[in-house]
Image 1 (spheres, one colour):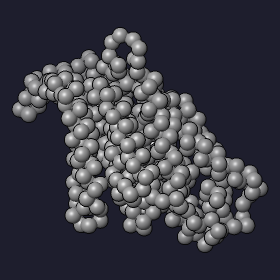
Image 2: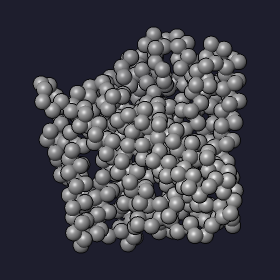
Image 3: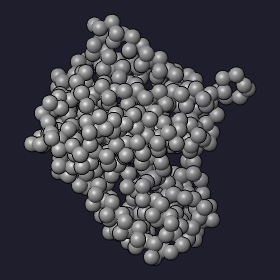
Image 4: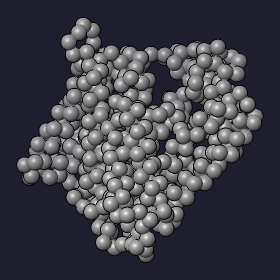
Length: 453
């Protein structure tokens, strides 16, 4: 079965070449997922391969792609960004190259259709893409480990996975959540001997991830995982009470939390508690509204940057200052340290500073379309409740971590949007292709091989 739908009798490419580009898109998606954590270069190559394949097949797929709301939104978004970059380049000529050079990181969700078209709601392909992403994380952890030398096994005090420890924490949180959900899904098929093996493998990988996760001294990483697990429990408990989910999955979830939580507490509890309770004087100043006397601690500097970001947004509330805004931080008068930062340490506020309220509305619209695609796939029986929750959890982890770092504007941030948003939105593109009257009906049967989880 070919990777994408084929426009009956209207392909501008010979069948062999068309199939080559379809396979190229899948290869690109695999390289993108596998390289996401351990190799930025490989991830970029994968993204480039998907783009080449997507453009090569665009004349064939355009009759149905042009009706897709996210494709339309992405086109409008690109046009608006070009206008905003041009305006900012005229206003700040010394930043002209940076304004246009930052288009990709701000365009972000506009690339979701690449992964969506490469997978197109095929559950087997989605599973392999997720497995490759997990394999990339495992490979990076093995590479980072100090397996034979002196010192800690994982030295993640400042960087992890070769990047900022807060950025790496998002990847760790997502992997933990994904493995927990996978384990719960296997628990629902416990009568199958293979399910036992998969369940044990999931727990083994969770244990393997435990040490590097706890070794990462990022408070945002710990808090976001805790909050996302609480959300997961509430969602799954509600599904169980409605009868939509068996009790076994929830029991596996609680058992995993008890075992892993106890291990974390015994091995790292005191260190984590000490880290979480630092900067109490900073919190007291914040709660008292004593803004001028907030100390220049990690949290304190963030609060000052957030207040500055709000001031800048209020000056240009509708369309923001442009795709690149780190030069604005250099104008901050009250703290020299802040003038050397390249981000506002809050992705939500930085969106408002860069592209204003109108730009933020584009991001919200894209998030809604991806959520709707996952919801409709769940209602249609194309995906399991576990994969649906995984998409919600990935979104929650993303939103929570953008509260302390402008994750969305780092390469791993906007590619996170493209990867997981694309996997979810592939089901919407699949439905769009199937409803097109010109699509060859022999290519409509997709999503075979069971559900994703």
